[in-house]
Length: 312
Image (cartoon, rainbow, N blue to C red):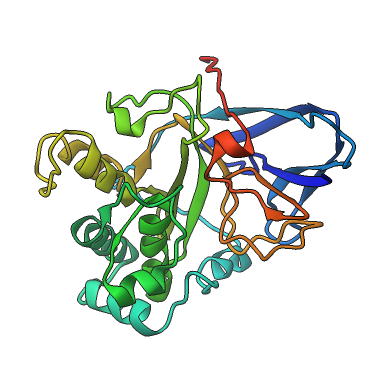
């Protein structure tokens, strides 16, 4: 039947990623568009009911590099006030009052600077949450429910969302960054790597916090939890473990360039869609008269993602 499709495109341009050109081919009606509010770029495709074998192929070229903040060197960084404000307000899945505010205040009690607050919250995530492999996709990021129920097991869009929500609740601008792993990790860890031949389940959410004197700083406590739970046969519970320690240190203030960012948006409205807003947009989305396809079931959907690394 008639089907609409939305594919996320890399929308981030920064000192660590340049989103370059994209090309596409399809037997449907195609349109490059955006959500119209948060700068989320996407390819929209409309397939008529009589298209027997609908297809679309999207190719995006990006340039990435590793990130690592130099904590010993503060700098005079400036960010647009409206941008900072946008990353200090609550969203549907990231409310900043109630238990979210209380948890953030308790975790940062005595912290005076942005860096101290971010470090306390990062450490709180690593100590109190855990990777839950049974969660579908990357999780939903419903932080209030997780905190209220005490069920703090999840995946990257859950755990990094808690970090972002707690940061915002104590006045530290923070944002989730939604994307996909592309190639192997320089840590040598399988759980932090992407298989470029098949990335249909390699979506990964990271996070950033805006810290005075440093600007936007990379964070990824969810990947620390992933290494603790899955990198070895045993569930590692101690961050001083030699497998975990280097990742725990590196991902507070840095991340690898083996990953591509799509966008930093929450509550995304898909143009022409009859469905509700998305909590985030880093999976292909489609819908027909029967409703939305399951983005977490790529073999049913059906889609594939691949990558080719071109070294500078």
